[in-house]
Each structure stands twice: as structure tokens, then as C-alpha cells.
Image 1 (spheres, rainbow, N blue to C red):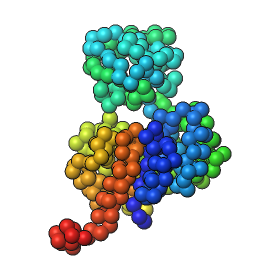
Image 2: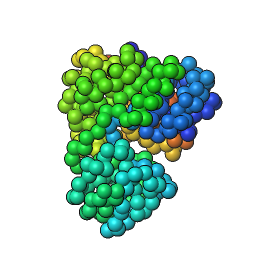
Image 3: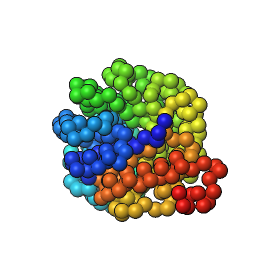
Length: 336
């Protein structure tokens, strides 16, 4: 099987010219991230892609993840020691107010909980709980934008799919979408819940939590592919362990003949620059050598300045990988 390229669509790439160029450069699947797509916009986004390209669409769920809601800007400053209100109901956030989604999270928070926002960029500690408003203190300062991932240092009960996911999947089915991705797949039961919605459509289960890693054996037989999301996984597992967890997951999936894709920070520097770092190129090559069947581009193509060049670079590394063998000489590699 040839290496697949999954491309996330966003403001930088949702136009006809870019979509056509991405298709020409070998994109196998256009990913729509429901965490960053409003439900009222979804049908129009799908229609545009389907009109412009024959590349299939994949709807990627919000899944069992906590996020903050809209903020007044994409860089609201939270100052250390400042008191902050966490609201039960939606409120546009600012330096003194924030609200969370999904809605059932609010009632599970208790005094002493530490809330990490956007990969530990900001940390809040709840000092007082209330019926409609909790009070927290900023213990680690920083800047926060809208819709950022949140981690709490204990188990919080979350549904594997949100109300928005279910509505989006129904829209997708009505429009002929045949590929779906389940974020934060933690168990076989999570997969069964989604199967009841999408039927026999292609299902990619994202492994991005300790539970998902530990329950991989029960997940693999029920899905079509898995996707290792190294970013969200690194919120629960120390970053220095991620390469070795990745290697273990790929080996396990390959032993069960389940294709495995890898995501997060593949070409992160190309969000802003037209060329990647050497470390990024080496990471892609190493991931392919581990046996990955596909590579997933996210922010690079959704909000980056160089979405087409990013896919071109991924293709260039894949071509070198396909030419290489353990017997390849230095001369073969350099001049061919």
C-alpha cells in the first residue's frame, strides 16, 4: 500500500486553486476538523470540496475532549495570581472569565482541580465552586485563544461523541461522506457507539490518550485504520516517551494488518516558513521507517502560509523513502 497523505482543510486551503493543487500533489483524504468547524458552516465546506475535487472527505470528530469556548481575541493574557471566573453557561471569554465545553464538565469540577489550557500554556487552580460560577486562580500565566484543548489532572466523565459530532456525522452521511475519524478513542465501546451512527463507513480511530494506548488490542479489530495523534498524547505521556510509544503502536497495528497514520508537528515550521527544518524531515523519514502507512498534516495546511509546498515536501520525502533500501549506497542516495 502506498503511503497516504491526509490534509486538514482550513482558512489557508479552503479555496479552489489550493484544493486543486493539493489534489495534484497527491492528497489522499481531505480532513475537516470538527473542533474548528462550526456546524452551520459544515455543509457548505463539504460542498465546496466535493465540487472542486474528487479526493474524499473525512469528518474528524471533537470526541471526548475538553476545550474552552470563544475568547474575545486569540491572545487573551492570563496574569499570575489573578482570580478568574469559570462560567457554567457560555460566555465570550476575557482575562477574567472563561467557559468550557462540553457542558457536563462544569458540574464535575471540584475545589483544588488544576486546569491546564493549551498544552500547559496556562494553568488555573479552582479555589471555590458555585452553582453557576467557579472561582479559579491563575497559577501559571500565559496567553489563551479560542477553542484550546484543556487537560485536568484526574478522570472527567466524557461522552466519546458530542452532540455536534452526531449532527455532523448525519450531515456527512446525507452528503455521501464515507470517511470518519473518532478523536480520543479510549475503548471498544467508544468504537461501537460511533459504528451505530456511521454504519460500515470507513472509520479511523485516533489514539491520543493513555486509555487508548492501553486498550489498543480491543480497538484494532473494530476499526479500519488508527491514527496516532502525538500532540494530544503528549498531554498525558512525557514527551521523551512519545517516539517509543509511537514505535510500539505502529508495530502492534502492523501485526494485526491495521493501517496506521501519524499526526502532529510533522512540518510545523512550514506554518510560517517555506522550508522545513532538518529535524522535521528526519522525523518523517523515521516515522516511515517505523512502518507508518500515512501522514497527517494539520495546522500546516489548515492555517499555514504554505499548504501546497508542505504537501510537496511530504511527497518528496515519501519518494526518497520508496527508493531507499538497506542496501542503498551513499552514491545511490545522493545522485538518484
